[in-house]
Image (cartoon, rainbow, N blue to C red; front, side, top):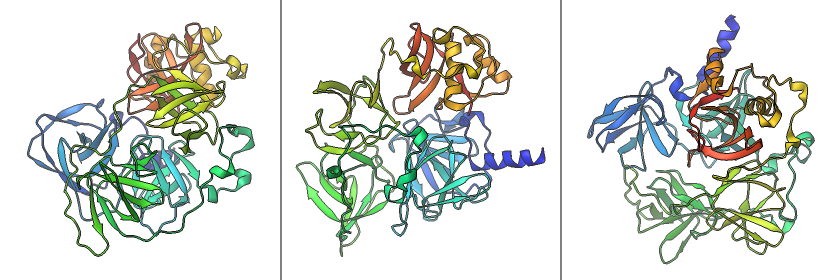
Length: 506
């Protein structure tokens, strides 16, 4: 019993993986990382970094508060000003934040060598100063964000990934972090286990001619300090080129080339990685040998080169590796990147060209599908998107429900077993699953997690993927229009039923 408590304590110290407002967190290392001043009235104090958590009052306009932790979630930047007290900011419009001069940088030193990437799959994953749960906590990793990894370490419980100078995140058996080695570090024989190997798209997969060679190191001609939030990094000096990520606010990058067009000045901060500036409002550039430009102490409300407001028509789940992203709907268009295997993308539009159906996943970014092999498309708002029943697991799971895919409880139980190996207890009718699961000791909450059971007024389904930007989830279910189905619904309900909550089985 004692060893069980110790292990539980270690897990709790490494990360709070349940929904943050259902946990009373203990902050043993309240190290100030900065200060903020409040710019608006009636800014709520919440118990965790989500708008769904409980409120405990308001911060006062004009007051200054000490900040102990910061994270991004649900479209906001969150600041912790005391134990279980968080306030939100939207693009610098509600608070002015100033980081302390001391403390670790949020990005890696150029002396570190990238060995892979780590995608964070959970909320409230601690960033620590070392690869130990006793190390000082520096902040919180962003859910659904992919970080570069520079070193790994292991102890008796966790695998640790270094995502910056003395900045480590923990993983427990692949549940909290999805780690991928860089191609050069991954042995070919073990790149993808044969039993679970992903198919490769052809002929839309890349040939050897598509592979880019490593460019020689370029000479630094200056530095560029980012002075706004949300500044896009693109693979060329054009707003129509592929977005590769987001530059870090208040970070200074080395510049190896400069280009200009009619609207922007572009700075190349690495091989084929460019950021834009508009009249000195987004970037403070200093040429080699010149004095440093002055920079703002807080990010202004506007963000640079924002993506246009678009309406999504559905989602596209990538079923293959090496699926090219092209800058138009046709194989004759240029390749601007690769889609990530097993990732679900929002779809802006679709069209047919040649043998393929093409899905637009961003500005001038398209992926191809061939007869449903490369991509599983689910139209947002569609009444039904039937799924082949050949994926049904064996009856050895001893499903306690009946009716097959025509019954939502049978479908949810079967899918949980298929995806997680967990045999759920019998939880009664669909409308009673949430209350019965809580009574039986299952972890529950109001925010979705992959492979959680979504319990609605009179229906149950399983979460396949989450889009925190649009606050929508892709669910898989039985008993909808009489069969096995996938569709895209909101965090808080289907188009006809409200959400009771989510049951977490992992």
